[in-house]
Length: 389
Image (cartoon, rainbow, N blue to C red; front, side, top):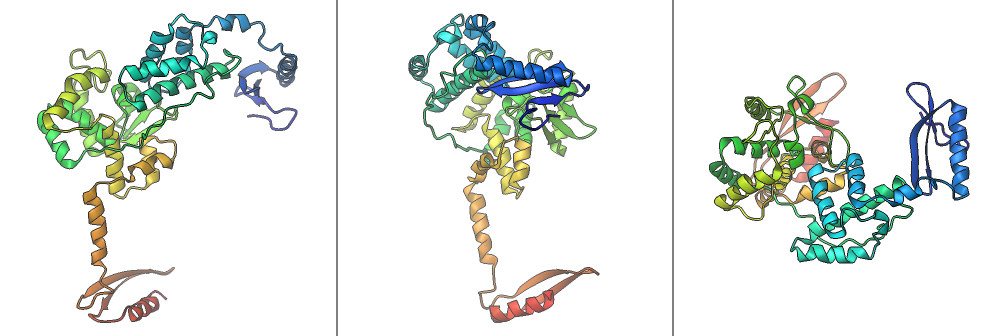
């Protein structure tokens, strides 16, 4: 537990009773580190602050950190970053192919990323993908600065390209039926599982029976997520049936490779050999595997599920991300607007039954009131107030 106050701020007591330090100097984190007694921890922190004021902090390790190569820096970042490993590997390979894996990280300047941006553009990838590559580089440099490997974060003011990344595409019911017709039962179960759980592709392929799935409590538990926070997804009846089918393959992976059950399914192979050909055969365009996650969220919203619950199931950091799923299907919006036609208070020649539930401390009463064919709305409201009162 951290000790608050000007003098002791930065000290904390560990579970074993020993004292440690956790403080920041010029934006860099020092700790958490267990020292021993409370006085020893306080002396250590004061000594570090004194060395920092004199410019001596880290001078012994400075030369070693200057020799850090880009390849080694990426590996350090991957061990401490919650991002999906598959994406990290792709971004880091792109960086190393341009700058060189043996290039000293301290020699790479901000101006060099103008050329890197042009290099990515020449590969004819989308602006959104270029933005993701640059975001990875910014996060890498920030991590190296926070951990003391860089004296200055040169990418702090790197400008990212603007792109409209609020695209939401979800699978319509007729499109899902077309996919079912062109996919094998085993592959279609993977699509249904993605829709039922709203999980990311990396989370699905990395599922293990012993670590993530519990039939007893009915939960799928994800501990390595994009935002670093554990997430627990309830297992529905259909989802349980899919998992029981997958269990028959006798693999440690929930979705093993079709060619080798000892290995997991890789996203690249599934997309190239199964999913994209199925989309083409079904005549479905402008659709990605990640859009199955959008499908899950959109169907939950259309079913009237609270945005807070949707956020918890999908693992979004805040409700702002859930708001993008408000782009619902035109059929559903039309059905919602049509409900306005059912309001009969302002119509004549319409007979309506209104059920009013009146609750009291003693008992609950259910009262049915008949509204006349031409009874004014004001009189109806007065009668309703009398019943409720």
